[in-house]
Amino acid sequence: MNLEKLPRHVAIIMDGNGRWAQQHSLQIARGHQAGVESLRDIIRESSDLGIHTLSLYAFSTENWRRSPAEVSALMALLLRYFASEIDELDEKNVRIRILGDKSGLPEPQRIAVTNAEERTRDNTGLNLCIALNYGGRQEILRAAKSLAKKAREGNLDPDAIDEAAFSDELYTAGLPDVDLLIRTSGEQRLSGFLLWQCAYAEFEFPSTLWPDFTLKEYHQALEEFQGRDRRYGGRK
Ligand code: IPE
Ligand code: IPE
Ligand code: MG
Image (tube, rainbow, N blue to C red; front, side, top):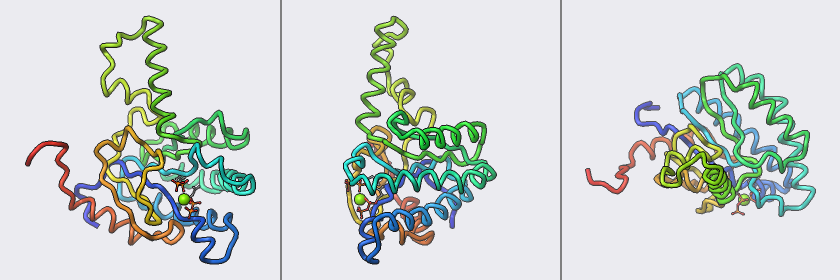
């Protein structure tokens, strides 16, 4: 794989676990479980390639609308994931960051993810962002409220609010904007993921369901990105 012009920030909407389970006549929870297997390879490869930031959409603010059985299967999987992966991630110098409203998570999950963030805080390798109870509009509203409060308290001149100041209030503060967004399963929508950060992202929509997504397809997406002409409104 050519390491030139790799994206600094890759975001992935890991979609298609439900359809995968259906195709294999399995329960939905087994689809999510299979999805975790794909995850492991993609994280390892991103770290090995020297990608700066990898953001994964794991659970949206809308996903609470699913059946209680599916939600609790996902929450249980989350706990198991952190318990089994944290040592290797830490060893690989990965820094974990949660995007989303952690206060809305059940207590064991909130504790597990907070511990993972704290344990890996000083790591300097791949920034691994996991979006949990995340909504892009919610994130933007939260930033707006925080700036408004600072202004009301007299700590901020509203005229000084620029893109950088706004970005600093987002969950992704300090991280680069998304360069490449991949959504598996053939759906072509953002479902609220990183709305602000994707302003100039390149998009890839492989039709593969997430549990079937391979390293080869990941490389294909990265290579496709390397061939894109990013103009940012200008002319070359
Ligand atoms: C994505 O897979 C995983 C989560 C939303 C947690 P889905 O469960 O949305 O899979 P489909 O879209 O039903 O196939
Ligand atoms: C987006 O997928 C959220 C995650 C992958 C975690 P969904 O499957 O929930 O999105 P919609 O409902 O198809 O837009
Ligand atoms: Mg889906």
